[in-house]
Length: 233
Ligand SMILES: *Cc1c(COP(=O)(O)O)cnc(C)c1O
Image (cartoon, rainbow, N blue to C red; front, side):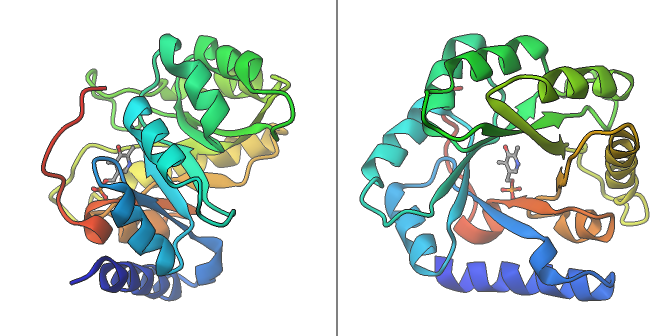
């Protein structure tokens, strides 16, 4: 299948999951995760109406963003990978969103380094929702403190929470981590934070994520195919 066809199939999956759970399909944004894929693959998706793209590797992303600078506006670039301090300046300059904020220091740098004249950087706090030591993200009991601190930074706009649950073979268990993330976001709203985004769900689990209230699903493989090489971070 072409990228346009795969994109269409993913949009249908989203619409179907939305309908099944009584949600309007336009409350769920599709982020096309284009990491490791070429600028031409992104052009194909763009031509098929996809305007939001997710990238995980700073140098690769910045190269593609400049190659694609000729695209008529409306491309929205999301940085979804882990972010080291020495890369924050480039991310602050080139991206619209950052999803994986798990330390205040990174958020502070992004806010300081956001170029004058650009709108605030839209950010999500990443939560370690599956409790594995190896996964990144802040622990659930630290989310409120980090979220409030991030929300107070001048050049960032806290939009919500993001998580990457551990892979799960049992469909009966697939929704549980997404439900936990949704509950954490609800608690933050009850605590006065104005957030609207639940960034959760990927190619294999977007249906379960939508069932639990995902507002933004990050989909790579189901649109572009399997990734054949790993770029060093
Ligand atoms: C690569 C990646 C995705 C996309 O995963 P697929 O399984 O290819 O859909 C989503 N989110 C993050 C944070 C990623 O790094």
